[in-house]
Each structure stands twice: as structure tokens, then as C-alpha cells.
Image 1 (cartoon, rainbow, N blue to C red):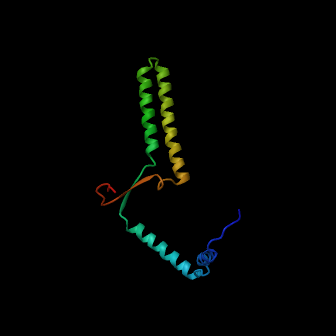
Image 2: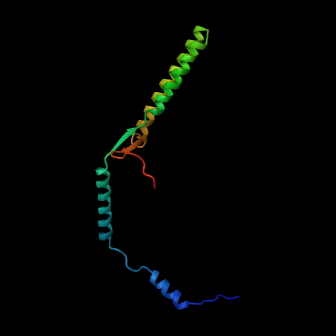
Image 3: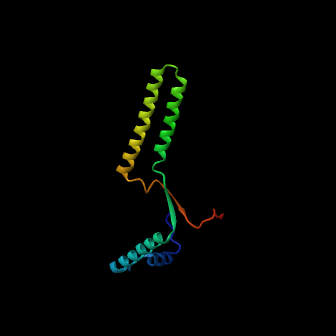
Length: 128
């Protein structure tokens, strides 16, 4: 079985129409990009939104968990030295979590990335 070309003239005209011969100039391209970037900047500035940073949330949860664990060790272990040693370990782990969180946020600059943006003026979700 050979290849059957039914509309070779139609195929040629489609290929000719799909060929792109005219390209925009560099000045036009750069002008359009600059205008687009300016519109995006103005849109970002005009949006009224409130940002709630959540960088401290892992640190706070770590402190709460280890504080409760330390209190449980003090209350449940009857040996005074052992309970104080376990509570001191929990305090150490809580402070280590604070240091690790602060160093991680400063080294990676995640304060803007770990945040929730709430647009002002919205009263609820719209259903589509």
C-alpha cells in the first residue's frame, strides 16, 4: 500500500499559511515587555491585601509540644533528678527548635514565601 495524497494542493496552501516569515522588531518586543512589566507592577501595588507571616509557626508549635512534654515528665516521673533531667532535655530541644527556625529563616529569606495573603474587601468565597 502506497501513500495516498488526496489534496496535495490544499496541503501545500496550509503549509504556506502556517509559515511565519515576519518577526516583530526588537524595539517592539522590548516595548511590549516593558509595558507588560509596568502593568504588572501597578497591579501589584494597587491590590490592597494583608499579609500574615507564618515563619514563626513551626517554632511556636515546637515550643508548645516540648513544654507539654516537659511538664508531663515532671508530673509523671517520681524520681526528682530524673524528672528534672528529662524536663531540661525538653527545654533544650525547645530552644534548639527556636534557634534552628530563626537561622533557617534568615539564611533562606523565607519570610515572604511563608505567608498568607488576604485581599481586603472580600466578604467570602464566590461560587462558580
